[in-house]
Amino acid sequence: MNDMKLKKIKYNILYKYTVLVVMLALTISSCTKFLEEVPTGSMTTAAKLQSAESGDALVIGPYRSLNLWLGGADDWGHYLIGPIEYQTGLAYTPDSHVQFWKYQGDQVAGDLLGAFTNFWNNQYQGVRDCNLSISLIPGITGYTDAQKAAALGEVRALRAWYFYTLVRYFGDVPMTTSVIRDVNSFEQPRVSLKTIYDEVIIPDLEYAVSAEAGLTDTRSTNGRVTKHVARAILADVYLTCAGYPYQEVETNPTANWCADGLWSAQTYPVNSVSAKDFLAKAKVQLDVLVNSGTYTLGTYADLRTPAKNNTGEAIFQAQFLTGVVGSGQIGVISAPLGSQVVSGDGNGTWVPSMEYYNSYDPADLRKQEKQFFYTWEYKHSGFDPNMGPSATFVQPHLYKWYDWTAMHGNGSSSLNWPFYRYADILLMQTEVNWTLNELGTAVPVADIVSGINKVRARALLPALTGATCDLKAIMSERAYELIFESKMLWDQRRTRRSLREGSGRFTSLNNFIGFNPTIFSFAFTAKHLLSPIGMTEIQYNSKCLQNFGYLPKQVGQ
Image (cartoon, rainbow, N blue to C red):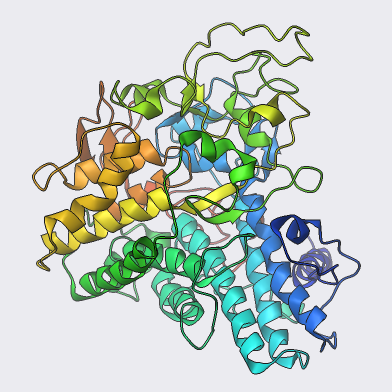
């Protein structure tokens, strides 16, 4: 490719990513209005914006990348939430389109459809939107100083979220914190993940929860960031930084951990000064959320009911609305191909492995028919006007997000996607309290088991005690409760632990490196603690090196 053509490509990419659609119809009194805002133009840093309406648009714009969590990955039935689960060794699909055999046989590369390129681009779109808004909000003369501070708190929390998703997936990434203004600045090297945590993610979130930002210390009722949302993200960040890869990078910050694959540590919990400090800080945020009395554990049916969006246990959700941006793909990829139980038929590309399913206690309410799983359903009227029952599925499929009305209608759902819900907060609280206690900070047993036992009580399972609540029990409960919520991969990477499936329980919690998932033909190595950087970034950013063990490699790497 000649230099002129490459420069033109980079210019087009640069222009695309620095233009933020922001001139909106700005009645934001409800979630519905939030999603119904209609773009009427575009903006760059050259725009002169001063009105409060312009400021509101700058705050709203960066939300547009959140619902891309459910975005496509460049083939039939292949969505970005699929690869997040495939890499854990606990997800399965018989369908060939997503090339699942590559996950089973350790053949994953950065050019695997849009699995990694699209995820990377979506998160960086969010980062760039945030950077643009952060640069322009101080100039909004229609805002009071307090409104400017709150707007910056909201947008900085979103920027932290986008960077957090990037470093968990890929490790070191380019640290773009200002608006890219020319083509020559487009290519940027990867920056240490520890630096990104220390200089962007944590400061952005700590600002969002500060008195200075002035965000309301309440739940989000419309998908917008409140202090509660920022607290949830920040607690998760602190918990992650108390583990890996942050703690290993801290031992030698200048080493090229990601490109050279230097990972070897597997001791968890990590007994270091910074780890204990992060855990103590996480406890503060989690205790505020739990003690607020705001959130409740409803029924499992609430999780798949659009009318329950932003209520009950919901804390932070990507917003969806039929007719604007629907989320019906969750139900479709969870339904078996040929089952005729959803509009247009199912894809069967997002299925918990049979071994995962068998690890649930038979008494667990979540395992019962049409709670978290299903083995049959009434057919869609488009296939059977009488809506008779389907044949029994070959294996249980996920019912957790099955919006019955949408799946038996046109397939478009208004069901939100949960980034954080109360059950997750309760389980994090138990883990943080247990870990602090293990590392020498005394925590009452009642405080350790409180969160996990609330989750187990809803599942109709017996309470744990101080003797039975250990790391395996905690990670097992996270696996049961948060199945297919994009949590397992991050849990494996931050703890360097993997669960071994069994009958009615997970039989053991094992070191990640050296663990051979039941449905994989290989054992995990240090390579699998990160994912490959997509081919597009490697091709167009000559300063970006590939993660250890993956293709395509950077020229000269």
